[in-house]
Each structure stands twice: as structure tokens, then as C-alpha cells.
Amino acid sequence: MNSENKQWIEVGTTDQIDMEDLIRFDHEGKTYAIYHIEDGFYATDGICTHEAVHLEEGIVMDDEIECPMHQGIFNIKTGKAMGPPVCIDLKTYQVKVEENKIYIEI
Amino acid sequence: MENNINYNIIILGGGQVAAHAATTIRQEDESSSLAIITNENYLPYERPPLSKSFLLNKVKESDFLFYNEDHYKKLNIDILKNEEVINIDFEKKLLESKNKKITYTKLLIATGCKNRTLDLENVNSDDVYYLRDINESIQIKNKLDLAKNILIIGGGFIGLEIASSANQLGKNVDVIELADSLMGRIVPKEIATIVKNKHQKNGVNVHLNTEIISITKIDDGYEINLSDNSVVKCDMIIVGIGAMPSVDIFKDSPLKIDNGILTDQNNKTSIENVFAAGDVANFFHPLYEENIRLESWKHAQNHGVAAGKNITGIKTEYKEIPWMWSDQYDLNLQLTGRCDQYDSFIKRGKDENEGIIYFFIKNNKIVGACGLGIGGKIGKDIRLAGMLSERKVEIEEDFLSDPSSKLNKLLKK
Ligand SMILES: Cc1cc2nc3c(=O)[nH]c(=O)nc-3n(C[C@H](O)[C@H](O)[C@H](O)COP(=O)(O)OP(=O)(O)OC[C@H]3O[C@@H](n4cnc5c(N)ncnc54)[C@H](O)[C@@H]3O)c2cc1C
Ligand code: FES
Image: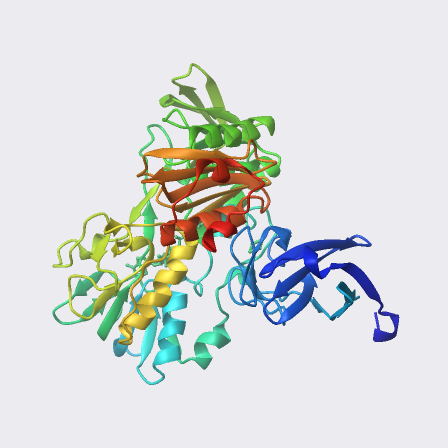
């Protein structure tokens, strides 16, 4: 998809995500993970690249998300897989906040 | 390559510990010569897929290497493959394989575990399979292509994971287990029963409290009489009855061994400049104030990293909370902390769909936990239970047993 086809989709409000936590957002058959960390709100694909588990149940520590199944770790801001067992990065998405509403660009 | 070689640092064993320790050593020390010696024909790889996704043909060998060849080349780490060390002289700092003599200044022993074996009367040993390495997993895979009826001896994690894989490949599977519950004593019976029911629902026959009475060779396999009065026909036998530390080559040496190589919290063995880590090490754990030995993926990683640091002189106390998992079908089981030393337990959740967890409690604090759930259901709470045990947080039963209460609130107390 080229950038012209991208659109901003509302995923929730800022008070829905605790600090150092995430929520799951499903849209058109895909799952996204929306995070609230010290530096703001971020979004990645919502499913682990290792064995297709929902990151929704994972744990946020600083700017990393740890998968609940085998503790694979990704950087929330860059999507980078930080080492075995995960080796494929997570896709990341642009996020903007307007009047307490969170939008991601997909 | 020459037959007499010297390295500043040698890692004996080329598994998970080796991959992480070598990489860590290079982060701290660019100049020492460094080699991994392994009797396998592969670069260090992950073992969990061997009983699961690799058997199911979902991944191939290159998918679960810790690092590719380039990584080791770039870091100037030599990997001597197919070199079984058969003798060691700690005084001379010398390792011997069939064709090589290799000396070292510092040594990290990371030889892992080897499987316990079973003598089965009337059975050709070629028909009995064990699982520890890639080659054995490939052999099992090849035989599974042809076999229809599989007998698995031992209802521990690895046996059950193979049962789950073989069942998913459409095979008839029987599992026999001596004890009255699957997966040993540390997994709560209720959780073990859910796992057993899952196997049975999928068509696996699970025989608890059962042993083999007799085996008869028949045309295309074996007929086996079991103590529960059933008769099982099989064309393949897989044995998974646990493992023990690979320490045979140290038998006549001064290295102190007791259920693995004894080390302190800094990977140090009883011999100067000799370190040990991973499955083979029975290490002192400062939090538990005694020696423990673990066979787990996460431990091998972190203990390897700690060993890498300790070898380069960066004193690193290893005190990670134990954690391991087992995947069978869509079930994910996790254990954390100490699951064998507690006064009472508190249960959270009712079944695998909701996620069921047993928190093990001592002096009103969590010391360990065991959980089972579909997919990643219990991962977060098990992780938090580990953290709570580390920080020795006092708990309240009502809070802990309520699946809707968020455990991370306790951490922020
Ligand atoms: C089939 C299987 C499934 C598993 N699944 C899980 C799981 O789901 N979750 C989990 O937490 N853990 C799991 N584990 C455990 C985990 O893989 C191990 O704890 C981990 O591999 C230990 O790492 P290590 O480096 O100590 O030993 P290993 O990875 O076993 O490496 C030891 C290496 O040393 C070599 N070696 C031994 N002796 C010599 C010698 N004399 N000369 C040369 N080389 C030698 C061996 O061949 C081997 O390559 C599993 C293990 C197996 C076997
Ligand atoms: S499924 Fe996420 S780390 Fe394995």
C-alpha cells in the first residue's frame, strides 16, 4: 500500500491505556497493539512474529513489549526483535493524539 | 587445521549457553582468542522446536539457529564442529578429542544434558528413539513419516510434546507413565489432568500408573503388554524419561560434581579459571540460598550471558528467577520460581480457556507459580508472579485468586 492510500483510524482514547500498558485494536481482520509508555503512545502489529500469539496479553517494560508465550522481546518504538526466540521485527505504525483520541495510520 | 591449538578462552559444548556466552565475551573482550568446541555438526541452535514446530515441519534448521555463520565470523569466534572432547586435563589446561589437543587459559563448560536411557528387552536398539539434538529430531521425523502407531515411554514435557506433534501428524499415540500424574510432581494435579484430558480428547491414549510387562517382536513392530492390562501395538518407540548432566568426561578429575557441576553464583567451579553454565551446572542461587540445577531455555540464555561476563572479569551475580514453558497443542504451560518448596497454594482461574494458575506461597509470599492456558493466556501473570517472588511482596489471597485483579498493582505497592 503506498502512503496515499493510508488513513488515520481512531483506536480509542488516551484514558483507556494505563501507563506501561497496551490495548488490542482489531480492524479489517488485522490486530494492532497500541501502547502507552513514558514517551507517549505507539502502535505495532498486535501478533507476535514468532508463533502468532496476541501481544495484548504481554507485558510492557520501559519501551519494550515482552510476548506472553515465550518471553520474546520487541522494541515498541521501532518494532525491532531484540533476540531469540523472536527474530522477525514487528511492523510499526504512526500514532497521533487529538483531544484525547488516539489515531493510527494504516 | 593444526592438531595442537591454543585459545585464551574455550567454551566446551556448542549449545544455547555457548551462543550467548561467546557473544557476550566479545562485547567485553575483542582480543582474546575464543573458540566453541562441539560434537555436533551444527552452529548453536534452539532445542524447543525439536519436539514441536520442527517435528511438525513448520520450521527448518536454519530458522532456529541463535546466530548465523556471519555473526561468529564477524566476532572472530571459531567454532570447531564434530569435535567430541573425550579427555580433559585440568592441570595442563588441555582438552583432547580424537584428533586434536587443545589448550586454554580459561574454560567454560557448557555440555548440557544427556538423555536417560532404557534397556528394553527384545527390542532392537535401532527401533528406540530419544530426542536431544537435531539429528535425533530428523530421525524421529523420518520414522514418523512411515510409522502409524507410536509408543512414547515417559509422560514428561518432552514425551508429551512429541505425543502432541505425532498426534497432529495423524499418528496413533500411546503414552505410558509410571507415576499417577503427568509431568512430574511439581505440576499441580489439576493442571496435569487438564493436559491429560487434552491429549485424550485428541485421541492419544494416556496410561498412568503403568509400566511395561513384556515386549514381543511381531512382523511390523512390537506388541507390548502393559501393567494396566492393555496391549499396545507399535512400530516406533520413543523414550523420554528425563535427562542428566553431561559430566562423564570429568569423572576422574578433581572437578566437584553433585547433580551437575557445582558452581557459585558467579559461574565459578571448584577449579580456578574453569566456569560452568546451563543445564550442566548446579549453581548457587543467592535468592534461594542453595544450589539448584535447571533445564530451561531462558536459564541457558541468561546463565550463558552471566558466564560470558564472569569469564571476562566483570563480576556478575546470577540470580534470575527460574522460568520455563511447554507447548502441547494450543496449550501453553509455564513454571516460574520454586514450585517444590511451599506451605500452601492459591488458585486463580478455573480452566485453560480463562487461564489457570497455582501460586505457591511460603510465609505469605509467592515463591513460585505454575500456569496453563490457551496461547499466551497465563504468560503475563506468571511473569508478574516471578517478579513478585523476587521482590518478596506480601500477598492477599482474595486479590490473588481473583482473575480480574491486576497483579502489576502489587509491584507498584
Ligand atoms: C527436545 C527439547 C525440547 C525443549 N523444549 C524446551 C521448552 O519448550 N522450554 C524450555 O524452557 N526449555 C526447553 N528445552 C530445554 C533447553 O533447550 C535447554 O535447557 C538448553 O538447550 C540448555 O542449554 P545448554 O547450552 O546448557 O545445553 P545444550 O543446548 O544441550 O548444549 C550442550 C552442547 O554440548 C555438546 N557436548 C556435550 N558433551 C560434549 C563433549 N564431550 N564434547 C563436545 N561437545 C559436547 C552437546 O552435543 C550440545 O551441543 C528443551 C530441550 C530439548 C532437548
Ligand atoms: S510466540 Fe511470541 S515469543 Fe514465541
